[in-house]
Image (cartoon, rainbow, N blue to C red):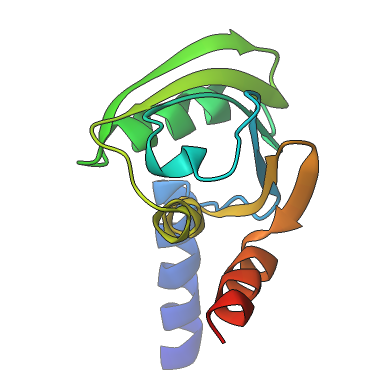
Length: 131
């Protein structure tokens, strides 16, 4: 009886708080970034894809705005499954920072200059370069 009550309370908490995590978000940086440009860029014209609906995209943008390193996040176009956003950072960072930033936001893939990689692959590439 005690286990059944625990399971029921857990299910109620999850459904009441509407917890869900995106597991298929892709961040596409629409601008062409040359070698080393990430270290000097603060404005990213981006497309985020993998949302279930428009509200989820809006909630994601609001979540980005709460990050202390983000100066602003503006939705340019939102069709539900993907959303064009202008992401402005307060200061420029290195590639590794942006990969970690993406992982914290539940973004699984990043597409830059037409090359799409998972965040794990990008981190592995950075580690291999340092060897």
